[in-house]
Image (cartoon, rainbow, N blue to C red):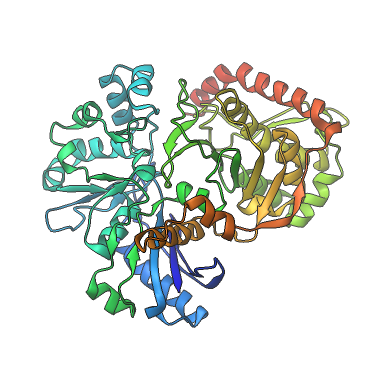
Length: 502
């Protein structure tokens, strides 16, 4: 028996064919097309592109696996979070979907927050802060900018829900992805009526029913199954890419943390009870197993090293070799990696800074080391906040491009003061979607397997564990304090610099 895991991301769709023991048998990929020539800050895609890419990626994975499609029992979908897919009464999208990285709705975000009494009040009511990229502000944008299209909207979905709708004909949201809309009370896991009404009195009626992620959505439509060569495949609830990534990295029990080192950086961990940051810096999501998933997100990780590599003509290995020539802590040279502004700490108008240049540190090796350390110290600020709010990390499971660097993993272990491991399967979101679907299938068959048991048996870590070096603890504690002190001291300067630029 086999399961399918689909990860529909921003750039494209990945598909995995996974046997029920957890081994990946085939892989496929198909790129996405975005809407061109949009205004600054806008990011949109036609949802039909996702359907097309799903079919192509799945076909490629099946070809590689040589698996008979009729032996596929279950399928799960992971999708980019926070998108906005407005459907009419016929189930067609009334316009292209606004994506998670669409930042054209700042005014709408501020309006909704103020309508609910300000930031503190919003967090108290919903348990989560409203970020610009969340779905709620996109809905209000449509009402203001395209009122005729808004009037046509019958149902509002997120990207992964839309693919589930195409597969089954059923519109629903599970708790995990829904918690990133800015419309759900994450403590009680219900739609927040006041938040919905702040956008439109009739909005709540357009929101689909909420479901526990353990509940499968249903079986694939016969015509879709026939087109894909499949039989009666069970479709699980699926979830957002971070929620599926948590399952795919084994992050379904307290203490296990996932750290993704990509263009941006994320750190998240499973909690049995609601996790709420009163300041709103740590996103208080639900997960896609029935628990909660507090998540830290920073905007700058591998983007900084890509710029540095390009400037010096370096490969990844050459960068690591160069940075290794400088001692831990780069002799006090600090890099604030805010090249794209920053989400945590909340510094949207910030920029990058090298602090501490002198005769010893004004060289490529020290700068390379400082750039790599700066990205982790940036995550370290939010990670410390997560700890102060109850996180007790036992292990960090690293994914993303940065996780291929042994030096980066060592810096993370030293700054976070926790062991770091990598994973045998790096496509965590697609793999997590497949495992969630196996969970749904076995539950439907009355086997009653728990998600923690399913994950423990199938998610494999690499053999090497990177332990924190005791000799570096005091050094990095001091460097973290200095890093925090520098960005706090420059907060007003960042704002003034942006005014000069404009």
